[in-house]
Image (cartoon, rainbow, N blue to C red; front, side, top):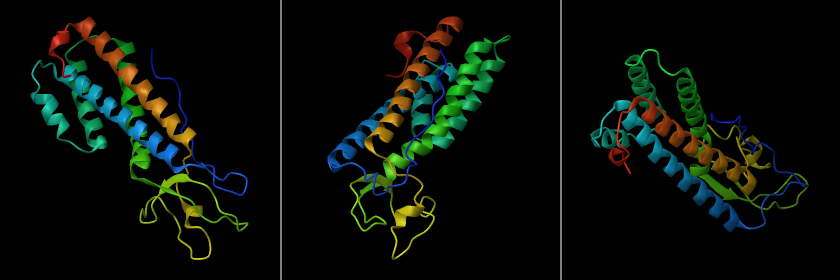
Length: 203
């Protein structure tokens, strides 16, 4: 079953009636969970790359793992997919559609993973003079994520995101669903085309 539609959250600006989380620790916990799940996703995508390279050896996995950029990894997966499909005519249209959707989702999800990984937990003064609670936001040094900095107003007014725990957990759920979809694709494609033995896959 292909990935269900998904919309990220975290674009609601802090305000006097939307002040954030009371506890810093709950944000830290949510961040750690999300990033751990993301790394599990990267591991299963390594297995997908191995399948598309049609090799029982881990050399391809090791080479793939040296690439730190998720954007570049997505390009490697697309290139390997093109060759894998070209060797099998006609290729199963359903699996092709699912893999293309997965890779598109992976590329989109990278932005939200990076927001979580590079965010900082902050509180600040609001327009009515009150003090907010806590959000995960881009650092003030993140030029691409903070449109404007002001002295008399909170710089976060120009921030690209303000994540509460629910927003981070929404991303975690998406990452988890992508893990399941990737495993389904690997198992289904491998069974259909008999590429590798289960024991040959990268752990």
